[in-house]
Length: 288
Image (tube, rainbow, N blue to C red; front, side):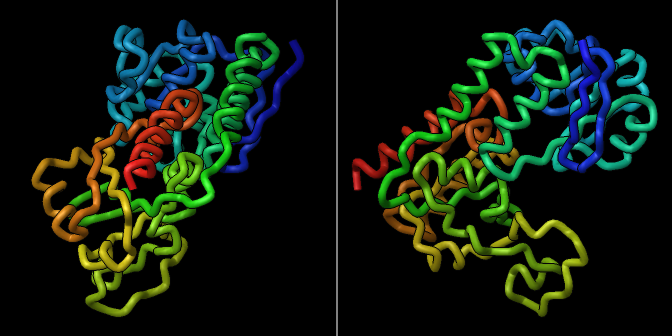
């Protein structure tokens, strides 16, 4: 098999003379994708949050996404480590990259997630297998479903204290658009410091820091006029009290709990997660 060269989302070239047979996944959605690609038997390490599919439970843990045990990863003798720029910490990834190829992803669009799935297939030497070709084709087909003429204005918080959401330059926001929603905070940037984000002081230059996840005030929500509030169960587990507090800000607007995986897990999960999310938004549209 010829040498495979791919680029990760940091722009680094990774070279594979032979398809990796020992993989450590530091990303829950990638662990799921590896099993969907039919190479779950190559996964020798995972984080404690890699819980899909159920068969992943038998794979040794190497810590969490934010507290990866570098020595534990290296002890497993991986030929490839799969990571994510947002989910994993930079020091751990830099330490691992000195010893083993580390493929870092950062999808910002739903299509990026399917392209990443195809990239994994190329790196693993399975891109031409019929089942893999079909999986990736179905992923792109899921994104091509006709969009409704009028998207539903949606507010989707991701944290409660401080209250946070996401803007248009994120995977989650693009998934909402693919599902027939419009992120009402699409144009809102995260301001620095926190006081500026909360309207209590002047903003300073972000200095290259991430501006895609703004911290917002409760009163901003009503001003954005959402027709639907979606509460994902990760990365924050919203409580019934949280739901009531948000409902009080936008009286009469449905507050609907959803799977955070359907909103944030990229790759193979999109094939099932996107239709579920679309069904939630379509159900609201039908009642309106």
